[in-house]
Length: 415
Image (tube, one colour):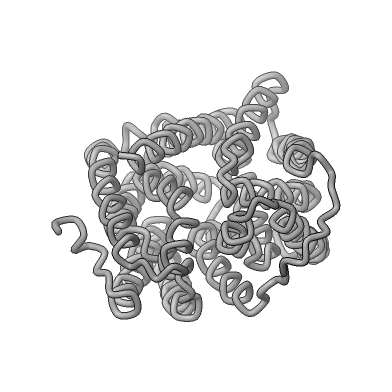
């Protein structure tokens, strides 16, 4: 009951965040039109990849290690660890954003993408500072500043700003995104750092770079699977088709909403159970989680499978061309949900290396199928590539969780 209560709270926030994100995408698609919207969605996908790469896996390391440091009454070692990882992440983001900006200036993408990408490069550092603050809040169970609430605030302010300014070009939306992310980054960092105190504790806060490297590899491959298809499409199809695929992909993510909410709650708990060698406690937690996931995931799947055209026409009449892609992506997300939190389970139990292997195979599958199918089938081919890569990745992760941890995740649905 306690898990269900907390999950309902986080899921409510996630649903609200998803509705705001949907409203934001809908407004941009209708306000800018397919071509300019495609430019913005391509730029956003590119900067999301750069942002995740430049975190160096340290945000996941925060979620894994902070609960152990925060168990004592003295919270200063945990805060010191957060500040240290945030500093490294910010420095890395500056370097990665600068490299992307230089590549953009030297013809990495078409001229239409230059201005939005440049502006988003400037906002990437702020976005990552905000993300690290949210990761710290998640690990220390401080709901007032978690990633979910920060995302809600970012989307809410952006929607209001778009409504008041009525932009007509992608670079104008990118300018608003950069400005709002910067303000929220400083606000969230100040909220968590106050009151400012210097830690005199001798409790070790050393960064486990070996684990961070493996987590970074997994994150890089995961974000590549989530956003890489949109970026690849930017070099192979028109901006309008990018907008179609992006809209279909965003709508399909509604199915995985419950899984994302669940990961927010159970990631630190899995780490604590594993550290205490309490496998039965972890199995009980996962059993309840998988059943809740299955219960909530079915309704949105049915809606997307039966009414894909009607759902996509919300973005505009031309978006109905992505109906087949939406149905394929919806089935892929259902598989992702029903296999349970296998990826986060491996990550929090020290199995980063084998998770990196499965993610690498899945990403390679996605890339090869995209390159092969997109020229022949357009965005429908891209959707098939995404679905098949999820089958490969999740299938491997289910097998690895059973072999390494003794838990068969799909079997928890009935036992």
